[in-house]
Length: 591
Image 1 (cartoon, rainbow, N blue to C red):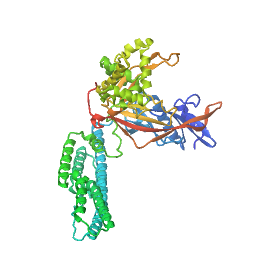
Image 2 (cartoon, one colour):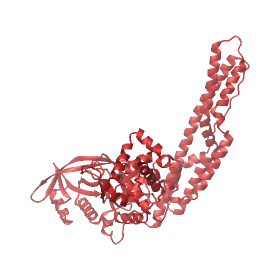
Image 3 (cartoon, rainbow, N blue to C red):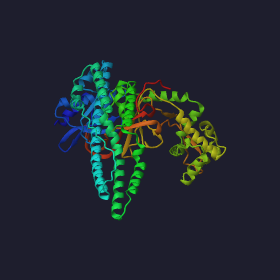
Image 4 (cartoon, rainbow, N blue to C red):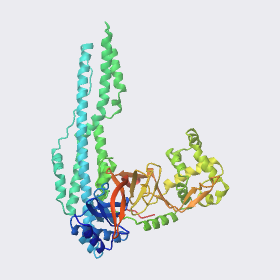
């Protein structure tokens, strides 16, 4: 381990002196290292300590830190830890998906390291699609096998009950016969597909050429198509639905026979028993089902139509489409870097303001309402699907019964207050204040207008939210929500998501006696409607620990003497897509 003098010499080489800013010397008992503070895009400032065995290792790390701190505003450099809980992580710097080494940084501005050619990016996109298709194929084979096992168990139960029924029927009256259906369980014998599955990963890893990967993707679609069209598989799906009804019917017939045998009448009319059997058959859920032949034909027609639709899907998101369309619960590999361009904050607001300026007066007013203190009123109305109700009186009655009307009465009274006239006219012109009923109708109209607005951006950006389950979800561009919370949600909004923006926020003034005066706050607000988006949460969660330091000042420098855990926060990462596109990105012109 290095000594303090050696560490200080390297620090001075890059203009650091362990006095007023990080990095600082770190010494805890016999351990000597270097204390850094990294600003992280999502997690805020992270204080950590690194230890070094050689001068070369130290120089390499200090140079990368110096370069990062001087270029992080100009380039989108990401600092990544291998573990965000430990105070001594392994630290890497990423630029557009590539790890930066010291030699990369020395010549970075002459040739931007990490910029890949379009061909390389396309190959990575296709490779990702092929990987997802392999996951889908494995999942489908697994489900098909599970279906076969369940159907086999149900068949054994059904056969045993039929045997029991036959014995009891014979015991009741010799010569009586009752017909019951017999089905043949289909076991998929496509061994070629199973053998191929074991080697798919190795085959994909060996492919280098884009056209070869495209052919591989085509072969995977072919196998998926054959698997879905398998007669055995479709037949088992039919039996999985039908067998429980057949089992229920035969159990009812056995109960009838047991009761009849228990009565022990000298003369028993077997026609009565038959009538009861026929009644069970006529009322059976099986009667509502189509026959197996029709079911197979309908299913195969539906499958063919689905695979025809696949031809219109972009090859880079083909796997995502199938997973989303078939509602498969799969953990997908991350999107390829550079697939989507990302807004910086300045350009984002320029585009949002431009988008807002092109709205009609009514649409702008609706955005002001949704971003104001009236947001909670809109959320309640949306949860009750008020915009689909014909009679608004019924909505008001429900609010009264559920003790929620006070929120609306309070809002109406506040807006009707004479001191709020100017603000109401300027920002809330869409609201009709003549009567309480007209006010409620205009609030519902706001919901309708918002749902009809189709505002989108052509680049992605990151946001943060707390109330991700609310009908109206507010997004923040700074992750300040983790300060007093144990969890934080990071959301990447993909291009084409319907979103809303308001340049100001109308709030209540809480420091005056009557509490009715409204104020305009210069808080720009971005929000989403939950029913318009598809949220995909990464299963992997990141726990980030924040540390606080103890330090001592010596004559020559400041030394950090310990790190103590301050708080920890669990981060959840979401990808937000437009629901209308099936959760997929589609190139469009910005509104």
